[in-house]
Image (tube, rainbow, N blue to C red; front, side, top):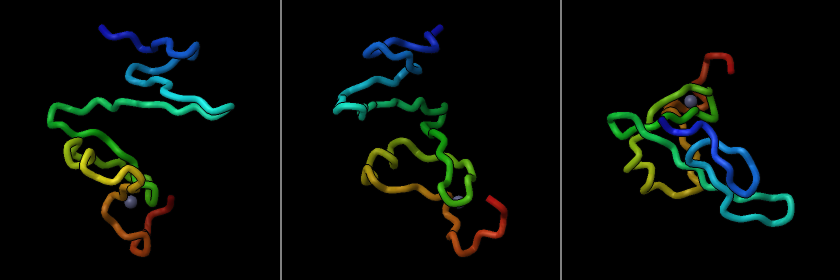
Length: 81
Ligand SMILES: [Zn+2]
């Protein structure tokens, strides 16, 4: 069974997380996200907070600064945040 936390740079962190750089009080971290049996992992929409799945191969091909939405347009939202 995998450990729940690991030590990296003196900080307790989850499996797959690690500090890769530091500038003063700002830390740069790399976090790996495990996929499910279909190669998908979960994301949460920044607009409506809906949780949806993303194909990890398609995600890898996307620009790094792209914000992923669930697919609904903000103007069409009717549910409370
Ligand atoms: Zn949404």
